[in-house]
Amino acid sequence: MIRLQDLKKISEYEWEIPKTYRHDMRVAVRLFVTRRLLEAALQDLSIEQAINAATLPGVVEPVVVMPDMHQGYGFPIGGVAATRYPEGVISPGAIGYDINCGVRLLASTIPLEAAEARLDTLADALNHYCPSGVGTEGSIHLTTSELDAVCRQGARWALKKGMASEEDLRRTEEGGCLEGADPAKVSQRAKQRGINQLGTLGAGNHFIEVDVIEQIFDAEAASAMGLQEGMLALLIHCGSRGFGHQICSDYVQDLQGAVKRYGIQLPDRELVCAPLDSPEGRDYLAAMRSAANYAFCNRQILAYHARRAFEEVFAGSGLRWQLHQVYDIAHNMGKVETHEVNGRKMKVCVHRKGATRAFGPGNPELPDSYKPIGQPVLVPGSMGTSSWVLVGTQESMERSWGSTCHGAGRVLSRHKAKKDFRGERLRNELEQSGIHVRAGSMSGLAEEAPLAYKDVNEVVETVSGAGIARKVARLRPVIVIKG
Amino acid sequence: MGKCGFEELQHTADWALQVWAPDEAELFRQAALGMNALMGLKLANKPARRVKISLSAEDTESLLVAFLSEILFHLEIERIGFEDFSVKLNGNRLIAELWGKPIRSIEKPIKAVTFHNLVVKRGEDGLEAQLVFDV
Image (cartoon, rainbow over all chains, first blue to last red):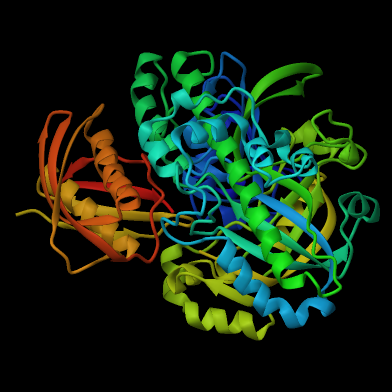
């Protein structure tokens, strides 16, 4: 097991594991953590898993780990690994089962004090329009050809159906559609799971939250995003549902044979991979992009439903009920991007698992309105605690593959959380602190207890201190909808 | 007679299970029962339905993941959970009959069965394996 003395301190917020630490490491591991967060991370296997990621063929220095890291399976949550394109590998386990799990933020000009009397009704309306919970089906029942269209078009499909605006798409990573998706590379099983789940939240740590914008830290960036102190905003956290889970499961299973064919040695079978330019690698990339597009479309439809709920509750009240899109960003994704490595442009496949893309100002990928400030980064906190809006920086481009943190990060196992906390009591405590809660499962609620997570403020202070993101606004929840 | 059963293990973000059995077929059965227990699965008091499955995979571990993934698929798509299993293994092939009933309630579903550090190994008390599930 790795110990604190095996790591080299670079700065107050940055540590390194040299590639000489273990014989099979191809590159160093760079950790954006304080000493306190590092000591906490040494309690589980997250750092060992980051070291394992540093053994992937074609990986480019360094593998990066964020302060919200925690133990996953194969690859740590909060990890970023870039592999040379096209001769390096792509690893489904380094992207995760919930492909394009991500966050969308919509903002309003409804002041909290004017809305307070209607929050309970709003919670009911959101719970009604945005189906959540185990195996939930939505109101949209796709045909097979429509599902294929969702795979190819992503959130653009919702635009064609009148459930999105051009502005929504402009303010979504990749315009809500990854090129190169091919539904022919998706199994029938995945399609069976995905066909009735579009527009649903699911269960687990996914949620819809209404927040109040509590504090602005960067007036220029907040203004570009349309964020005003004291106004309501809406966060949606979910992904590609059973569709993405099945695609990842299928390819992790299929690639078990590929690693043998390509002679790839791995320390953990969950890291199975294939060269990006191999038939297996190309097939997974095309299927993964299909799931990513499904997820973009899913969050778009949930946003459409949330807008219906806001309209129903606030129309005729004299308040402007409209919600404008701030941004939509993935935190489980594999993307082919160009980065500068040792002064030269290099095309790499950036695996982000529990890490958010955080492109700096001027990046051509950003919509014009965000080019001066950098890409919005959305960091949800644990249930009932603050969430954050950040922006990417030039330093994130230079030091962390244009990436930053994605959330609070767990510290307590689900088993222990269920043992230590009671869902009903937790709900009462949240309600007493002024948060309206709608939850499908009390044991699920207990697993997501705030004390089971790190302090999101500490995570944000760390990425901010390290310079790989800049603070824009802090949000405080007033409604939480969970599956 | 070797050890036979399952036990939940600590895992920061997901769910993990230790499974023991005297032979492979029983190991698969115990893993499925353990997965049901983790999910808090309760079945309706209705007549059981039989589902036959046939799978092949790279090795025993891959077969175990495929078998459990098959159960999750039926759980999500057909809303049935299985409480009895007859499993036959022959090399890297599996034929099984599963008896299931409609789901009455489920506390929390499993998204996927992972290969993380998965090794089916023979210990002093028979076979054992550790499984990590994505939730």
